[in-house]
Length: 252
Figure 1 (cartoon, rainbow, N blue to C red):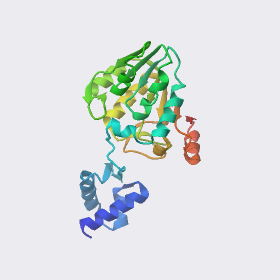
Figure 2 (tube, one colour):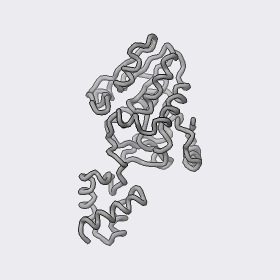
Figure 3 (cartoon, rainbow, N blue to C red):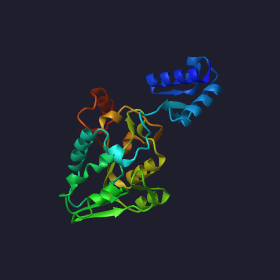
Figure 4 (cartoon, helix red, strand yellow):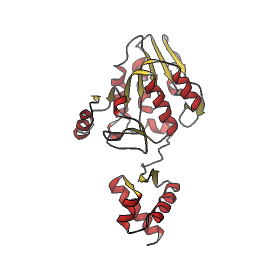
């Protein structure tokens, strides 16, 4: 079996099962594990799948490292619902972390009348949203500028977050499941989220229902780190039941 045919078969398998181990693919195709590892590396370089430790997972429809402006336009109505609901968890006088996720950003219009308020963020769009709002004080985390994501990342940013304390943190994730907790495509963004989780009394995950029950390659926090999930009403009952079984509170 030539590479092009193996390529077609591997992608077909991942399309059905989302993620597989090297040996599983090798057994399914009757090909050596060494050959499969080489093929997976090639397909990863072509951005047709995502390599994981010991295997591979199906690639999302477009690159996961999407610019902030592009991410804003995905599941817009659901994100706005989530942002409005999440804002009800904020009280005057709170100090809150807000990460650079596009869903977290949708909280901004609903926070402008919850004053006084202090926001600690790595998101430039969030800073801009409150530039003219009185009694909302914004601390911009320092570090390396990611122009595509319009955010500050890096080791210095993580250290900066660790020097603060907040009553609440509002974060996003690329995937969430009862089995693997919170997952991400980007190690830099996951590092920011971990730091905010460690420095907040309560942590709220803002995640639309299309991401729930799906895993990205990097596990960055267990469900036990999250105070509650804030999602939209379209969350499937089976996924809600699995998360509640893990004692995760859900707002939708």
